[in-house]
Structure formats: C-alpha cells, structure tokens
Length: 297
Image (cartoon, rainbow, N blue to C red; front, side, top):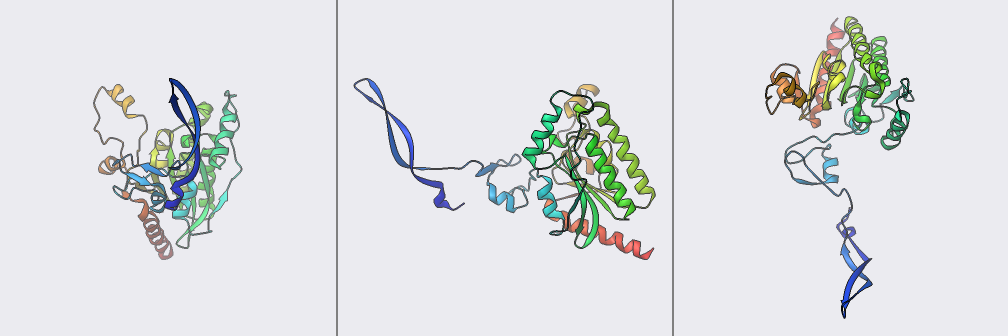
C-alpha cells in the first residue's frame, strides 16, 4: 500500500464542544491518519511487528526469527507444486451428518464459505521440479483440520491412487485431531488410513509426511507418523493429547520444549527439520534419489 494512502482527507467525525456549561456536537472535516486493518502483524515468537505484505513475501515467515505462521493449502501448494501442475481429486466430497449432530451441517457450510474449500484436506496430483507425485495438504482453517469421515476417505483414496499409478505420496499434516461431531466414525479413520498406508508400503511405495503446525490427536496417531520419511516444518507443534492433560495423568512436570518438532527430532521420532523456504528443494532431492533407485532396479 502506498504511504500516501495512509492519509485520507476530509474524514468526517464529531467533536464535542462545551459552551456555557452546555455540551454541543459539531461535525468537522480534518485530515487524519488512516491505518487499515491487518496492515501489521505481531510475531508470536519474537514479538516484532511485521508489515503484513512483507510476511507474505517471505513465505509467511518472520524475517527476524523465522517463525512460521500457519498457512492454508492454497499458499502451501503455490510453494511446493510446479506452477499450474496441481490437479485436484475428490473435490466435491463433503460430510454428511450421520449421527444427526445438532448444527453440524450448518457449521460445515460456514467453514466452506469462509475457507473456500469443501473439507479439511485437499488431495490431487502435481509435479515437484517435474517429478509427478500424489499430494495431500491439510488446512487448519477448516474446523482446525479435524479428521472426520471425508478426510479419512480422501487420504485413503490418495494413497490408493499413488499405489495404482506407482507414484510417490506426500501429505502435509495440520490437525487438531478427531472431529467430535462424527464420534466413533471419526476415530475409525485412524485404522482406515493406517491400513491403506500398510498396503502402499508393502507394494513398495514411497510415502513422505511433512508435519506442520499444529499436528495433534488422531492424525498424529495415524498417517502423520507413518511416513517412510518424516519431515517436521520448523517450529511445528506435534502431539497426541495436550501437554496439560498428560501432566495431570502422569503427575509429572514436562519439559518446556515438550511436543515441539525440535524435541521430537532429538528423541528420534522425525527424520529432519526444514525451514519453509527449503522445503521444495528437499522434497525434490528425495524424489530424484527415489527415481534413481527405481531406475536402477
């Protein structure tokens, strides 16, 4: 936004004057500074105030401390997929209210309108530096990326497509866990997706998971942690139950860094931590190595 646009002339407002003990309102016109909404954002990690457009230009990361802000699947695909290569599958698949949970379909419709997507994951095919893959990207903007029957079905179909077409599979996870409005049906998706990944693995498929902030609950307990290669995006929160719940259960104080991607890397649960700006290059290198191994065989 040009600096000149921050000042709007002739903005009308009301001044209150007092004359002879009587308050009188008077409408005046003056040039006043105008600061639009969302011009700046505060980094939750280092506290610096950042110009929103600069954050976007920096792959939604803080230029001071490299804190990674949460992003949706549209921005994620722009960063990872070759331009114009993404082809979505199962686009119109949406939830039904099997358990007659009050207000569930209205909530779904609201999130579809506000997010522009039909569910908490988008799946499809794309190329990464000209290598074709099947890709899934979860989006925490849709019901906090919760996993219901549609998320489980879309993940399973993506796995099956990768198996049939003999393509590598990459899933970016971001989830608050199971979707409570679908009860046991939601929990069943853990077994469903895990079984599909086992079949894909037995067929010799390459499965890469990229864990982004936050990845918790049933997604962590299923397909997020079953990758042949597990990559953590810098600064991501990863866990199953909440830290406070665990502390109350085991009656112990947990480390401050507990459930951070750095903590899990130290304990051997993930293979590497990657900054967002380096993610496409790393995935490309892995895919090239995998392609060379397949050609040798």
